[in-house]
Length: 310
Image 1 (cartoon, rainbow, N blue to C red):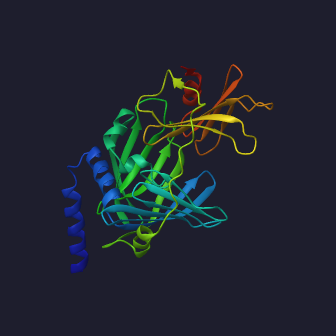
Image 2 (cartoon, helix red, strand yellow):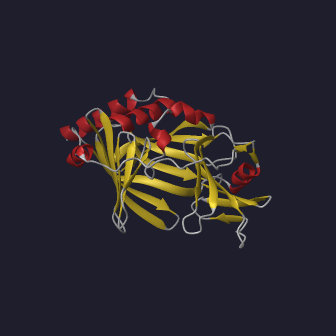
Image 3 (cartoon, rainbow, N blue to C red):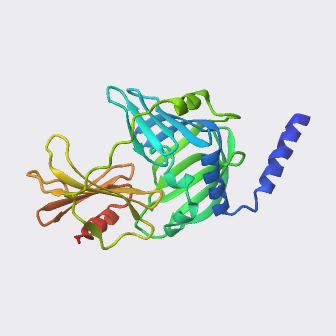
C-alpha cells in the first residue's frame, strides 16, 4: 500500500510541476529530447487500411546524432543516419547516401527542429492527457491557421518529453494518419548498434542532380509557412523524359510538384486516397504539372496553377 501511495504522490507532483508549461514549451522540450536523448522505440503507423511496424533507435556517439530506422514487415529495409548523412539499405539494391538532417518516415522533421517555424501555419493548444504505451502523455494540438493544410495533434511523454503519438486530422476531425509508440525505452548510453554504425564506412553522398538545362519555375502563390526545400531536374528512368521536381514543406505537410511534357495518355484531374494524400494534374500549355501531398486537393490545385516560368 505504501508503494502505491508513493507512486501516486510522485505522479501527482510531476503533474503539478508541469501545469505551468505552455503548449509551445511542451513542443520545444520534445524537440530537444528528440535531438539529445538516447532511446529505442517500437512504433506502428496506421494509414487507411495499412499498418506498418517500425523500430527506431537514437543516440549520441562522439558528439553527433546517430539513428537507425528499421521496417519490420516485408523485405529488409533500413535507414541509418550519422550526423547529416542518411544511408538507405534495401533488399536487392545498392546502398546509397543522401544529405538530410532527419530520417524521413518516422516523425515529421519539424518536431525535432525549430518549433517557432511551425507558428507560420499552426496554432499550439494544450489538450488533455492520456496513457499511451503505458506512459502518461500530454496532448498538444497543432491547429491549422487556414484551410490549406490539415490539423495535427501530438502526445508528449510527461517523463522524457519524447513523442508518443502523432495524428493528422482533416477538417471534419477524421483521422488520416497515425504514428504511435507501443514501447519506449530510454537508454543510459547509446545502443551498441549505433556505436557500430558510427564506425561504419557508409557510401558517399550522391551528387545533386545537374540543373544546367532546368527551367526557372516559380510560384506566385504559396500558403503561409510553405517553403521550397528542394529543386531538381532529371530524366525519368526508362523513358528518359526530362522532369522538373520541386519539394515544398511547412514543417509538417510535404508537397511534391513535377513539371513535364504532356504524355500521350492524359492523367486524371484529381485522385484522393483515404489517408489524406491528394494529387492534382494541371495543364500549362503543352506541359503537365502534377502536385502530390497530404493537404486538401484545393490547396494543390492553387499551387499548381500558380507556377510561372521566370
